[in-house]
Length: 165
Image (tube, rainbow, N blue to C red; front, side, top):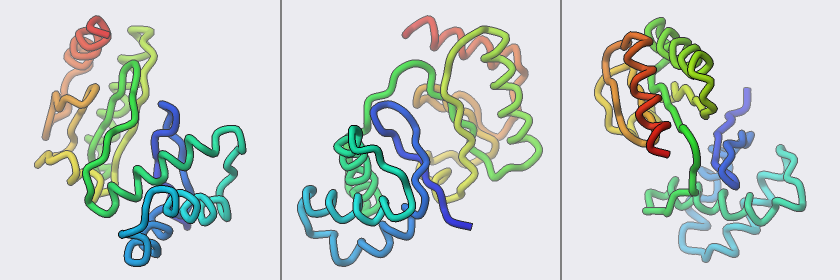
């Protein structure tokens, strides 16, 4: 089964098939190349297993270069986000699944639009520096670690963040 990594392109999360392998293969030979050279190569490789519409090719290129630079351990400027961005971090245990379900229900009950991502890859989870699962992050702020908060508490957090947007 091919790996699929989600990257932010023009503010939207898009799944890219085989990106992990592409970046691993390019790491040694392209680490010292400029962004244009990286962009051309990574777009060419990604297009072998992904449909990349010509009208958004530039945005894909920028996002793929950003992900490659991040993969190399370099500091990169994040793509701008808007609205509620919610992440559940956890390996997929029953508590993690329950937290994701509760967040979905809270969003629906509050009629709030938001992007909800469940990150179950341990490498990705480690990037956030949390030391327990499940963890809940709302717009970049860790609001819960190691527990499954009550839905009423999740609603309070969501309303507070949504009110400040």
